[in-house]
Amino acid sequence: MSDKNLQGAMPPSGLGSGKSADVVVVGAGVAGLACARQLRRAGLEGLVLEKSVGLGGRMATRRVEHAGQTVPVDHGVQYLTPDSDSFYRWVKELLGLGLLREWTRSLHLLDREGLRPEDSNAEKPRYICPRGMTMLAKQLATSLSIHTQTRVVGLRPLATTWQLQAENGQCYEAAAVVMAIPAPQLLPLLQEGIPPANNLLSLLGSAAYQPCIAVLAGYSESTPLPPWKGIKCLQDPMLAWLALDSSKRPQPLPPLVVFHGGAEWSSLYLDAGPAELEKAGRELLAHAAKRLDPWLASPQWMQVHRWRYAFPVETIGLASLGTHVPASAGRGLPLVCAGDWCAGERVEGAWLSGQDAAKTLLAMLGIPVQAR
Image (cartoon, rainbow, N blue to C red):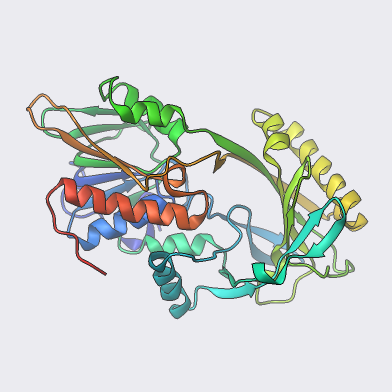
């Protein structure tokens, strides 16, 4: 399968050598994919451009060799907990497809007093994908035309269309654009193409993110299974989260643990090289071992991943932002922005933002929105 065209979906007519579409969605995270799926259902010919090799953004899974098996491990989003009716409908769809199952209803908390179960009133179903959370993004992408490894480096309005320039030299044109990427990545692209007085620029400029260093660690078969599946770390200077990722998989496995560093500690390693990043990972495991169990400091193998844009510091309070950008032909070109910095840091926030972005764009184009 070509990484330029995921899910076996051939580019619709006009998306081959011409590189033109009704809509181009930049970003194949949850917000971008949810938006593109809704636009396709409305009959729009669209194309999704993604800078990375895979889909889903922080809904990410690596495949690792552990205990003689190749197994998935979620190093970004850990589970889903639906609150809104709209998001629950998607979760219910995934449950019906067999892609989701309930992982646990109760997490543990680690505070200054030590480890304890969370309060019973905080219990709720936490859903995971046994095949890895990135499979949910691939399900969203079914039938969409997606070009991966395509980083957009330029965006400007022409007479009647938007022009998008990719780092690989490809050029795309579209009547409308949806930008579903982190605000700090989006702002430089828009500063050239839209008027400085546009309120969108000031909103983007105020959006800030917290980083996260994630460590994946596999332990020997002689390691005892811990009594917890997931731990929220409260008021810890280094550690924010631990998950027994091996408990998500259908086959019995020795412990495989995912650690998430706290934002302040993680920010110390934003520009660290590979050696320093590995050292940071060892430091995080040693800290977890001191707080919880000594065996956490001695994995058989370890990988470290840096999430530069892990969590928005605060959201803007609007599910998506739409504007018409002046063009030389006299009519404004539709531009919609979406992402977790709009509607919330969780997967549900990104989903709702993508749904709202599609609704906003369809209204701007005068296309009736079908109720679901």
